[in-house]
Image 1 (cartoon, rainbow, N blue to C red):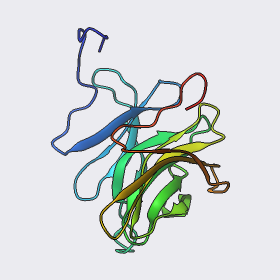
Image 2: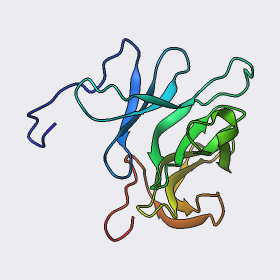
Image 3: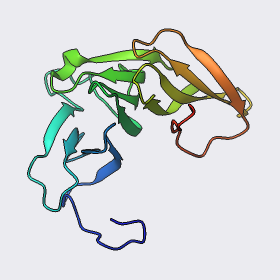
Image 4: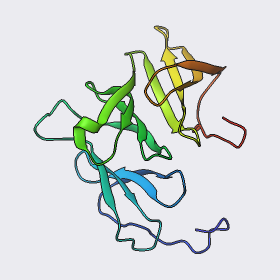
Length: 178
């Protein structure tokens, strides 16, 4: 679709619900998740009636009912093809690192969440060396502390970048950083 709304066409049509479309790093593919039951994460070209849709990771495997990806927001892809997303299921609770197309063995928890903390909008830096995300901690009175943080792609070097009063947006890297 052009910026003025012209030349709009569907790149994929399904009877399932599809969520959180986003671009890969070079803008050549669209990432989205959806499908029946617990669904999967897919990638495809942004062409009308594209035929190159591939499954990057399933969100549920019947042989391990406790292993479940329950996405909270979208996914981000590094220049090297790794994925990051937020998960809210019990066994995999926190920011996930995903190596596509290798199944469960390609999924690790980079940064675990706690009962009173949730993460939002993880996104790779343009060079893939950092992941920025929002952290929202809720105290026993319902008050929230929100901060923008970063980690290395292996989950190390947790750094608080800034505290903010509220968070109702997606984090994006700009030409000069966050």
